Image (cartoon, rainbow, N blue to C red; front, side):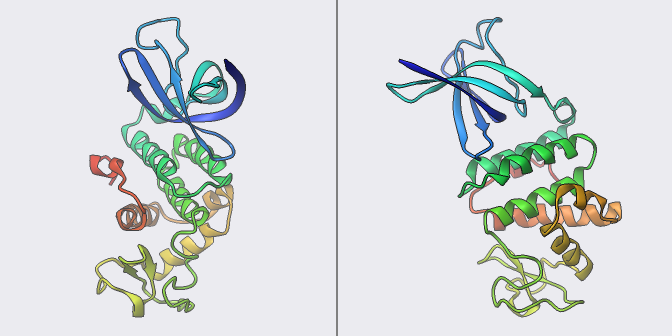
Length: 243
């Protein structure tokens, strides 16, 4: 027996399965990630196909005997072609997708965060959209802090304080709680920018005036610290495509 259903979703990952099948990881608006089989797609030209980062309404079927879900059809909303044609954008989008798949909790905000970030990334806002995704993702996952208070001692940051980093917390901390003797630092203006990003929408974040160089430095800082702050290993970071 099979039960048909539909859901809005976006493809996070695509893997080969057995000889002719494919398995999709599809993020849905309630932030659950579905494992969806596309049977015979690598053999039949008539089979329904879905590339990574395809967003749409997915027609699915769940087998009652084993719970496996298969793809029947897609009403596509976006292919995000502008990401797939750019290697670095693809790597960044893949990083965000891997974080969602390996995330430790579910938050409905994640779907909107991911899809809106992909739209901004596709339009050319690479550094700013990367910063926004990472800050808001960690906020949704209750990781790190609010960029106003030290997550270790809870003290409020000084206006011109340079932040250090705690390996045990995987987060930026005040100078007194710095465990790395200034090896990883965050300047005051960068910290203030992240505090603003923490509290605003993506549209508001993109309107904040910031130089391209500063955006690059903050994006690199967040990517650099991600290996210490994320609770699981992220294989996309091993590729060297994200700098």
